[in-house]
Amino acid sequence: VTEVETLNDVLANEHAALYVYGVLGARTSESGTPDLYAALRASYDVHRARRDELTGLVAADGATPAPAATAYEVPGGLETADGVTGAALALERACAAVYATAVAGTTAERREWAVTALNDAAVRELGFRGTPEMFPGAGEYADR
Amino acid sequence: VLGRRGVLAGALGLAALSACDVDDLRPPEDEPTPTASPTATTSSEPDSDQQIADYVGHRLATMGRVVDDTRKAFPRLRARLQPLARMHRAHLEVLPAPDGDEIPPMAPVDGTAAEALAYLLAQEGTLQKSLADLAGGVQSGALARLLASMSASVSQHLAALPAPATDGRPS
Image (cartoon, rainbow over the protein chains, first blue to last red):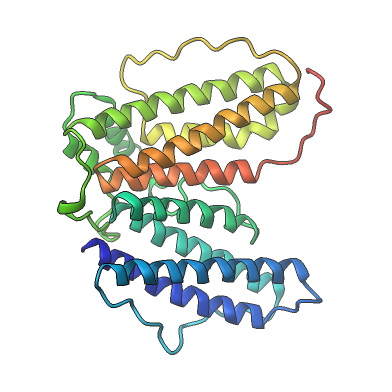
């Protein structure tokens, strides 16, 4: 797997994250649960920025940025704020794992980008009732 | 489980091991980790990753002692700092201090609990940044991933630290 392929995998994940966040936001009442809505909005904005950064990085390498799919599988149980919160937490944890994989598969500035993204995702989990982990994005070390 | 952890910890505690031993950090086969492009790897010396792993083990052990000493000196902070103490212990199980490593005695924790806490949090912040920086510089992708995850864990723990439960007076 080359570095640009790794980045394209992360880009594909960002497309999916954006789609799911869009659905989560649509299922959330801005007036009824303003904190949750704000957290979802902020996360959406971060992932959109990451998508744009990755698109630029991949294109700069002369590769074709991974396109977004028409639709993605959306988790169930989104009828309640708790369900939406749980889905957002699961999404950020999945993103953290993808960023951690990108750390391993890149070097130099690209790796620094992935390290920053991993740190950000780990902290963002807390906004969705996540609790601190020993090894965000690399949970197998906690299970040894 | 304990056996695997022990093997890993023991292997990384030996300074003479070659860099390929650090690659034992790679995750299980069902979670393949892409390898960095050979043409784009850093120009580290062959044993530099092992040296960095040893250095990180020393830093983790030192920081763990700072946390433990602060908890002992200020019982009011014990519960609040317990997650940090657990985190350092968990990290040390994966990247232990090298054999024979001596942690220098810490200066007595004095001042108020608030001052001690502020010092400790500053040190944790420095550790987080160091782990992130070191992740960017090691040759092994697996070690980079581990260091980055550790840095993210420190970030998380600091962000989740409960609000102060002390009025700042020494306990």
